[in-house]
Every structure is written in C-alpha cells, then in structure tokens.
Length: 295
Image (cartoon, rainbow, N blue to C red; front, side):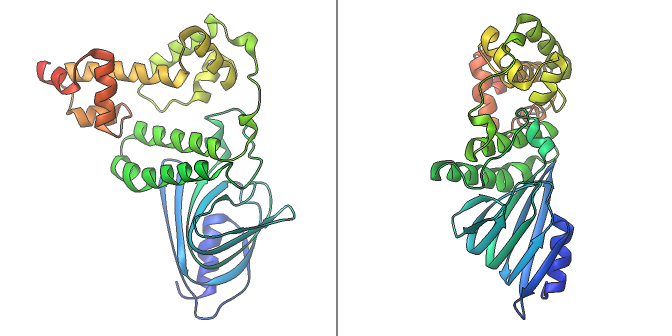
C-alpha cells in the first residue's frame, strides 16, 4: 500500500479503531497476517512514519523489531523499541499511542482466553522481557513455530494446539506476570480423587485439543491445583500424562499400520518425527519404524 489512508484501513481492520495523526508523504507500507489456530502472526514493514492512537486492543500484541523504530505510550509511560527489542505493546484493556519510523517488525496476537488455557487468571505486569536471555528464547520460539512448524503442520490440529501451548508458556516465562511469583493455591484439592477425575477425562479425550484448563475443569479444580495433584501423586504434570496417553495411542496405530511414522506422529501431536522416535523408544524400547514393520 502506498498511502496513509490505505495504511489506516489495514491497521484498523487488524487491531481495532485507530486514528492516524499525520504521516510522511509518499509512504510505502506492507503488512501480512496469517492465522494458525487461534494465534495470529503479523509482519509490518516499509518506508513509512506516522503516529497512531488506538482504543484498547482487547488482545495481547507481543512483538520484536528487526529494523527501524517503534514507540509505544500507555498509562503515562513511553517505551521506545529499537532493532533487536522484544515487547508487549500494552495491556489489552488500555488505550495505546504508537509511532513508527521505517519499521521491519513482527507481532504475535494472543487473546486472554488462549493465555488462560495454560495458567489461571494471567495478568502481565510489564511490557519488557525479564531478561535478554528470556527475550532471545521467546523470539527464537516464535520464529521456529511461525516459519518451520506451523506452515508444515497446519492441517494437524494437535500439532497446532501443542505449538500454541508452547508459545504461551514461552511468553509467560519471558514477560513479567502474576504467575511467576504466586504461591500454589488450592492445596486441599490436590488429592487422589482429583487425579482420577482428570485421568478419566484425559483418556477419553486424548485425540482432541485438550488444554490444562480443560483438564482442571473436568476435575472441578483450578489449573494450579491439578498441577499440584499430578506432581504429588504421579510425579508429572497433567500435560505430560496427556502426552503419555497419546504416545500409547500412537503405538496402537503403529501396530495396526494406520499410516506412516510421520503421519502417525503428527496425528498425535508431534511436529518432529525425531522427537517422536526418541519418546517412543524411551517408552517402548524400540523405534516406531520397527513396530510399524512388525505390525
């Protein structure tokens, strides 16, 4: 697009009601968006400069700058992002003023609902990563999922779901939020009956996109309580138990020759056959290809 009116139209469609305040003549901006499941990956670039005022975005917009300059203002704080910086644009319920100058930047858009499937009542408490190492890990994960995993496996819902959980978990580890310091709650619910309810749900729904929130809801407890219960009684997390059940389902498919190793791995949530092979061998003592050949 080559004018500010077109840029305004595209940005408003992507992020909600935005007002552009001035801008550079003869601007050139390009923007691409792609949805994988319930996560949107945006890329913005060009020779353009403007200031924009946005109403609350109602989503989390995390990003990183490759070149140029991005400035965000919210809650009376100004934040300038330069090449190499990783950021959260603003809390989803706060208005935002943004200014960009010749940017090359990428963004990941997450809803509160997607975040809350991984942890209880998440609130992000800052827009800067907790450390350069955490920022680098977050950016590396985003690039790996966007460019390598999701384009190849977008037709495999369990792979997309697992990638989404990984992205959220990496985001929670990278940016300050209330889950980093809160003590484990609801210890009274971490008893064997809670685990039994959760296991029954997992085994009945292993082929579906199951989240930690789904498991907790089925067991009638919080996410923190179900995680504590599994650690206390099974020495693993609920999602690790789900992976074990899915590995057993993959073993059954291998024994009945229900597809290739790669297809079976993807069906049960593995984007990388090498990881699937390693997990399978650790559990069953042989490679999945050996089981498939003997089936």
